[in-house]
Image (cartoon, rainbow, N blue to C red; front, top):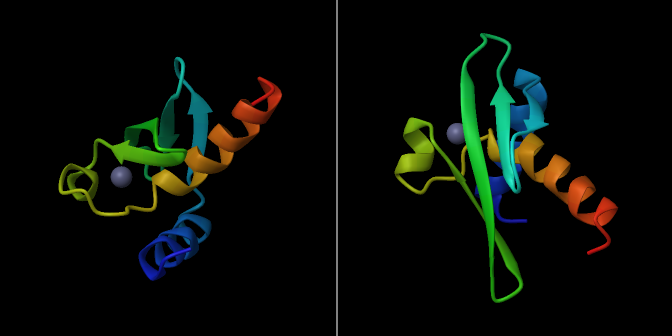
Length: 82
Ligand SMILES: [Zn+2]
């Protein structure tokens, strides 16, 4: 993991964000302050890219909302047999 992602992961644990599946590979992330963000994933050359609709995500920064969504996405993808 890159440093930015590690920092994001630490922040996500600290903030106790929760994620749930919306449709396909879109996830709704809820923060303890009840802010809701939508995170979407796509695959490119076997790599997973996540985009969040918060301010940091709009600037292509790794925000901590991606982390719970990525964990859920991994679980969902493995359930789908991929
Ligand atoms: Zn975000």
